[in-house]
Length: 144
Image (cartoon, rainbow, N blue to C red):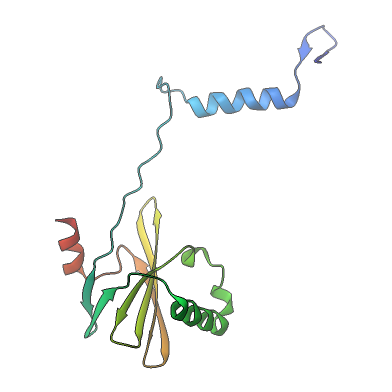
């Protein structure tokens, strides 16, 4: 039950005031009845691409060998475990029997950012950047 102040004005509980303020903020001042979420661009990875002398093929699944390789990678670099750059399931690419490449992509206001971990020749290598992780020629073919 609301209490009355010195001058007899009702003092509403803080939770009701906060709820009212939230409604005003979410409805905005533009006169639009409902807020629309910004559409996040959907990026489809290429089925295959060529880079660094290797032909990379998108894998159908993320299997136990992938899990074991990434566990090994994170044991070697424990500071990266739990990094927001490596959140979620990566796209997995293979080249030959032993080379694997894991690509994480995240969206931001100023475009996509990516992080890749590659395992080949018994070694790990990582790379990251802004934009898309595939060669420019592949990116051009994806947008057509």
